[in-house]
Image 1: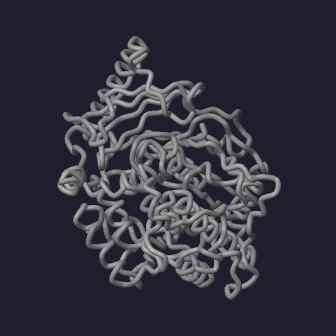
Image 2: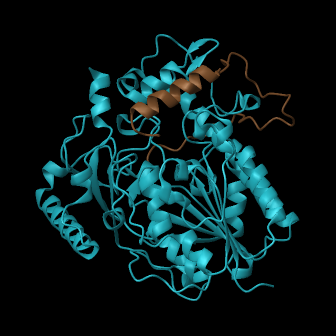
Image 3: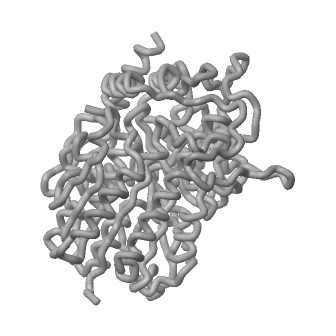
Length: 55
Length: 442
């Protein structure tokens, strides 16, 4: 019933746990920062309205 | 203790079953939901008779198949009949105090039926699906703290794992094995831009400080982070029930309206197509006072239209005669042997207009209109040999295709007759969003 091969965790691959506090982050080096600005969210709404997905 | 249980129905929009540990996922994304499942009953094979959000939730609340209630599309023209049974309305009549922490009523008015209280913190956002589990929980827990009259029914609709996937910043780094999320030479997502939802994602939530996200593994990691965030919310809600002394006689149902296609079948981070990644959904029920054996797993097929009759029976209500679903309460309580359906049927009519008929071994998909992806009108998958539904064997199994098509058409005709319909609602509605898709492709 699985749709995709299950993601396997290699024995030596450490899966990061959630940070102890909101101020600390797991290893995020090199990761980009998403920036969904209000104008982007407005664009999401506009596009989904065009599709008839939302009123 | 009051005789009737409180009921909390949780819908996690777009939650794909096999991204939960208790459904076999290998990453530690859902420890709290997994723990919750260990305290209650888990249904391994639950299917949505209609997708996506609006048809599926209509089925959940009416206990009817979309061919019966008529809502087959998201944003279609059909309206729900006023006399169609509706779960919160019936529970209200049974003396329940009813509350929705949800936004669906803003899109389709029938989703507000039967609620004495409607709380909608998504009003703080431009797009309702941007509402977070924390915002919903804040209001839901506050309401439970102050509600004077029990039993109560509460519906909570979480949107965290629905696009746009924008998890809390503190989760950066989780569930991504490395690579360059914004490699401009990675073109694995390019086909998605041909779809209007993909173009919307490209122009908004996939943009980052480093450029456009191009690695599908990173988008999947964003989904998984949202799921981890949702998992924290389920824990917070569960803890609040304990603190309020409500946990014992509150029946908590956690399910999804549909799953999510990641990149499966060239459908990117969306919920259409009738493959199992989208139509198979999780369902977990915890009810300590209901004598549920903790950690029970049910293997037989169930469908989302079984939820309403089950909850109504738990509430001591008589069941309306025109439900398609069957209560599984006796099985849940260990008073009957586990049983279910030997085949399930479902449909969609938003991005494409199709039906599926699924047995344990085979999935047959029949199109009412040609789809824009160029798939054949008839697809057959051998789920035993090909659980990912990647190899259409319809051409090599014409007799089986004919048999399944005949069975499917007979079932549709029977349901239409029972509902007093003269036209197949999927054929009538057609793929409601496809025109926009065609325009987008130019």
